[in-house]
Image (cartoon, rainbow, N blue to C red; front, side, top):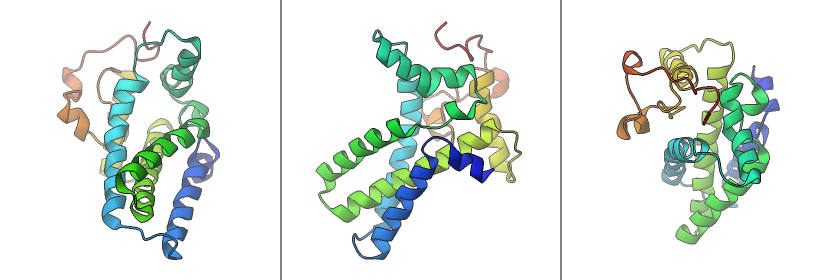
Length: 197
């Protein structure tokens, strides 16, 4: 299962980036800060919800190029939710996004250790997201009660109503922004597979 996970998307690249940043910290090239790592992970989880809800579920763009990106990055994943090649963030999307975050962190923090720590937190959050998302879409029963619950939680978004349950790793932002409802209270959508029919 882990081999399949590493073969797709940016997952091997994420692990390499995490290892490189940890090595930089271990060798003293940069001083990693636990608080900044935690903040980087928290910022990732905030962006997870916002990106999923407002960017990946945005209406089709006027530009054909942008529409192709929308299909590859999310629309087609809803159409074929079990296709592993559509499940993960591709490297061509990861690298520019990471560069934007790192640039913003550098402009604010102006300290290489803080920037590296924030980026490390982002990468750890993204790796966790990719794993949880992967487990939700493959025939595997998670070992923990939370793992089983979060898998069902995400699959509701795909098979019951795509306008709810945008959190993949946790429901916190769904609760905060009222996109969380009890399963019994949710209306079944006829556009979970084909977004924006």
